Amino acid sequence: ASGWLRKLIEVAYTTEMGLECEEQSALNFLTFIDPGTEAFRIFGESDERFHVRGGNDSIVRALGAKLDDAIETGAVLEAIRQSPDGHYTLSFKRGGGAFEARAPKVVLAMPFTTLRRVRIDVELPPAKRRAIDELGYGTNAKLMIGFSERVWRTRHASGGATYSDLPYQTTWETSRMQPGAAGILTNFVGGTHGVEIGHGTPKQQADRTSAELDAIFPRIGAARTGMREARMHWPSFPWTLGSYACFRPGQWTTIRGAVGERVGNLHFAGEHCAFDNQGFMEGGVETGEWAAQAILGKTESRAA
Image (tube, rainbow, N blue to C red; front, side):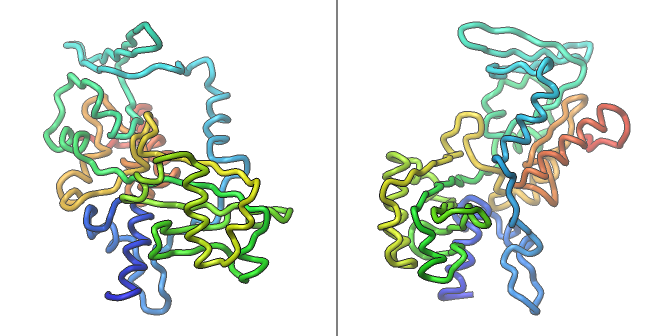
């Protein structure tokens, strides 16, 4: 592909996978796009029309409410070591203090961006250690921008979904099917721009993006007056330090299979460990179920 089609694909896969195209494996693209000729489906069978009413974190909050007495909050895992009897000791820091927990089986559901900061005194296969140390992660970020009028609909007969060669990259409407005149466009970015959008204040970035959008939806900037904005910047969020896994060149064939493999009674879960649902919430749920079923002895685990 060349010209505008190549640019479209580059913008689409920089934002979808999270890194600049030259920084990620070509297999990310080849295994995701629909190769059929009947229709152009840039993300294959991926269907992202739906969102959770009340926000995605309402799922976590509901699950947490059921397990409230079993959850230790505000604790940071700093080290894990294995004793001669096979048990694991986990060292945590909380505030100005520290504590340890001992368990025969452990599930590590942390992204590898933060796990690689943990001292792991457990014998790991070379591929597993390399996966933890080197697995690529996207630099996606979201900027939710409020407008007093849904200019893209009222003046331009558009649903608000765009891909552009302008710096803002992509948008979609978050307020669709909701009552009222005001609306929200989500600006989803990745790659270098994903890092850059974390600079300055959310308002400064929202105003810059709306100025760029004026080339697509003239007069949209006027609808920004008095409206709010919100930003989620995963690259700088301390508990993720990235959005989701993005396999770099060579990582599909060297470490992908090792990412989710258990080592002894050390289990791993999270979107990065999934196959078909890697990068999505479903991947986190799926791999959490795999780990739970393996611990309960109900399935054959993915053992290293």
